[in-house]
Image (cartoon, rainbow, N blue to C red; front, side):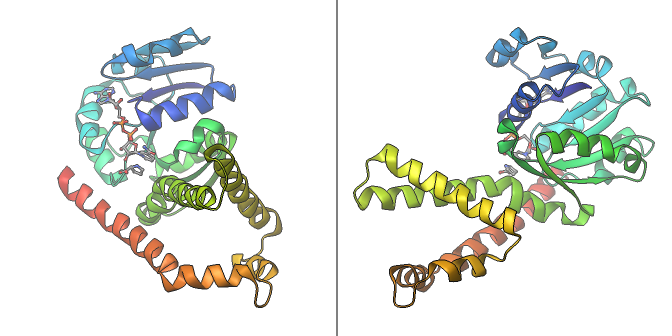
Length: 266
Ligand SMILES: NC(=O)C1=CN([C@@H]2O[C@H](COP(=O)(O)OP(=O)(O)OC[C@H]3O[C@@H](n4cnc5c(N)ncnc54)[C@H](O)[C@@H]3O)[C@@H](O)[C@H]2O)C=CC1
Ligand SMILES: O=C(O)[C@@H]1CCC=N1
């Protein structure tokens, strides 16, 4: 596949790493305003680093846009005359509706919104996908790319805002939980390195248990909470201090912030 990443910042670079390490490209164009910082990627075979979005569009079929929301409109205006029927436009931009993209490039384009997360760098992104009517004909192509780099789910576009919080921001939320459990492990006597190993692999195990069993988390919790034991003591104390409630409220705050981001684009 001939892929271009338009805007290779934090997310774009994570996507590039995933594509390169999984041999998922025929050619890969990585664009950025100041490409010097990602110049080293040009050493990979068939990878090209440039600030020239037009060249990247002309030489590629799949265009993955990963610029900040306020930067997308100008880029779409700049490249729209280069778009042909070979192009599939994949936007990862938060809060940027398909209708806004269509308003610039027209409805007669394959347009897909994708919401991956930075775990795409290690082939473990949970990516949600939605498309315009024409884009339905190419959604399998997007699915194939993102399934190679983790898991994907096709959703209606009106769930994209929620998917952004749960999956994309979700990486940061889980990182903070891992950091907090690491800090607790240090306080309980492990050195920092060991503490993080214990926290990361326990988190990995919890997630793997659910993925492989299909069980509800409470079912697995019931297996750990020995009556009158230490686990239920700790869990109840966490809930008294608002663990679930603060997570839910934080995620709702993230969701609401996207409405502000959308307003800023108008
Ligand atoms: N960072 C994340 O984990 C996720 C980000 N997103 C979305 O992805 C987009 C990018 O986010 P980040 O990577 O965090 O931002 P970022 O600021 O790290 O990356 C944006 C990149 O675009 C480049 N850029 C700006 N104007 C350009 C132009 N005219 N031509 C080429 N490149 C240009 C910048 O140089 C920068 O490297 C945002 O819309 C965000 O909502 C979506 C899911 C996850
Ligand atoms: O924080 C943000 O706005 C972007 C979208 C999801 C992850 N990063």
